[in-house]
Image 1 (cartoon, rainbow, N blue to C red):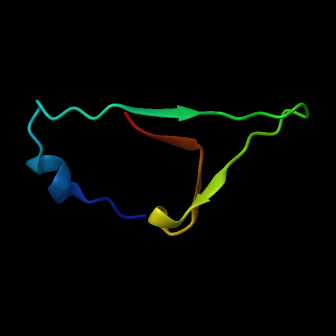
Image 2 (image 1 turned 90 degrees about the vertical axis):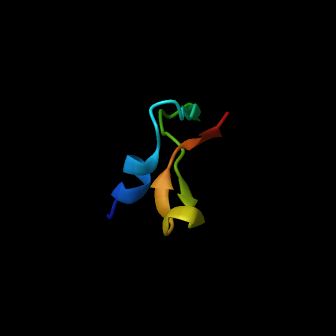
Length: 50
């Protein structure tokens, strides 16, 4: 996995992103993960920016 450190260093301390994520669990205790095309089909929980 690679990280885009250039974008991280360019942001000022006033740029705040609020994100959220939820865990969806069934009766068997299994947690849902979805494939995210935006991130090369890596598994992730549901969520996003507010």
